[in-house]
Image (tube, rainbow, N blue to C red; front, side, top):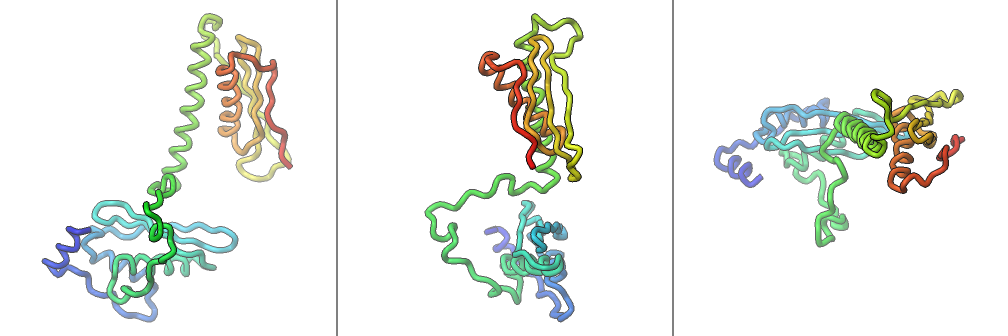
Length: 235
């Protein structure tokens, strides 16, 4: 940001104020501002919105000096109002002419009164698609790790081509939500053991529940009953 300020001072590159129009929304003003703001590199803001309890929250992502930044506003009754609220905050943050005094820092905020700046939320820079991809990768890794432990533990008992485990699934036929409640059972044929996980939503999560029991079985040296069940169907 220091280099950006010097650039603005030397080149007088501060973008011109957005046209004052009663019909222009703050979201549109932000887009116009970013198109002429050097720090944005000519990249347009990217918007997303979430609904909860009948109110909408808007999130805008900007590229500032090549670094992705995300900003969120207050929850509003409509997506348009939520986007304008978020845009107004960003325009103030970037000190767009006309918005310099739109907000003031909260003197009671943890970042203001604390000796150290609070850590950001986990995965704060990731979007929903990235989070979903990370979760799927972690789940797949969990399954592979447990499967490898089983193969190593019972390598001598396995016949050529024999699978180390077998899976079966139950679904709650009365559940109309998606993904439906599911419970997985994994059987380890070479030791005659079965493990049934808790009822959860989705087949993949059901596998993870059952895998946790298998991992516990391996860690405790196999001191579990022949059929291990965890959890009952929630109502």
